[in-house]
Image 1 (spheres, rainbow, N blue to C red):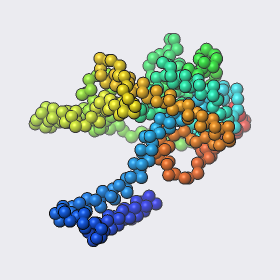
Image 2 (image 1 turned 90 degrees about the vertical axis):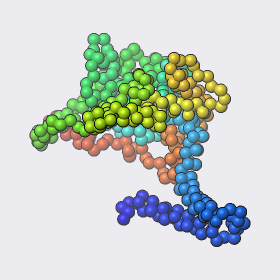
Image 3 (image 1 turned 90 degrees about the horizontal axis):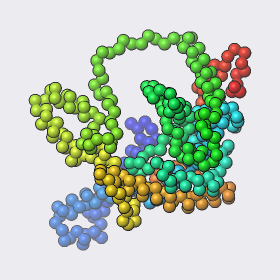
Image 4 (image 1 turned 180 degrees about the horizontal axis):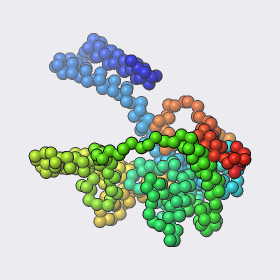
Length: 425
């Protein structure tokens, strides 16, 4: 029995397509229009063709709409990516507001916790009420950065992710900045995030007159530290009232499928990177299989020849070769001792050039919308693919970017005796 609307719709669609298959087979067997076409072929081959045609027709009807949307995305992917990247300007401006808000220099409507800056970036950077629109001067600065050696945004493939959370992660950036100061320990704490200050942020600072040491040496994190202080007090009070149960005795046995990180793909020879559980398969085989080395040799060659997905170097190289297919003619590949690195550099160069070519029209459209009072579309690299037929109204980001209940309860619960239960600290 289906348990959701999705299940019911899937079953209904399956039944609909099966009915199309049966109706197609029946028509091909009985409709006089088709009989002259089939007359010159053997009956067995005609019957096989009818079954094949009906199945293939249903497959086209089932998968075709998604493939049309996918092709639409492929056709305009650089425009979509250029539009998404245009909002890096707003991400930088939002971060600068976060810096000033944390220092207590400004107040912002609806902002009571630093987590809300990340929420505005994820849910509504294009509609954030306290961010002024992107100006042409800001656009020109961003385009100059993309076209400069300072921009190292283009990596192993066009699909390299740009993590949304990184742009407003003040704490991780500040920890990395502290670690880079003279005399600081280079060691990292386990399970603690460290993040480089984004290259675009640094370029913007250098070209807009930001003071030396901005932001971490020039602006204190007063509100952020106070928020964390009150959250810690609230957490300590809850733990005192509800002490946790004693931890279970540790299991002396090792986990069967313990994770082993894979090294950087270009650090060593490509045949080292097969699967993350290669270590476990090999250890198990050597312990229990009578012909262990032969089996492992066969497996290694099988993986290398038939499935380069298990080889991170070749996988990334293939991604770059696919990207180079977007070139509309010969495209130079720089010389390199490792040919794969040459492919990487050529693909990165092409990626950059196609984005730079797409940006002017993208900004002109954005500027036209602002000047005429139209709402800018939300930035989304894949909007043309998954929203081509989506006519649902856009959600209101203001409803998604309010203070989270657990933060409100924790901060107000941590205000000391005699302090007002509000966010004015």
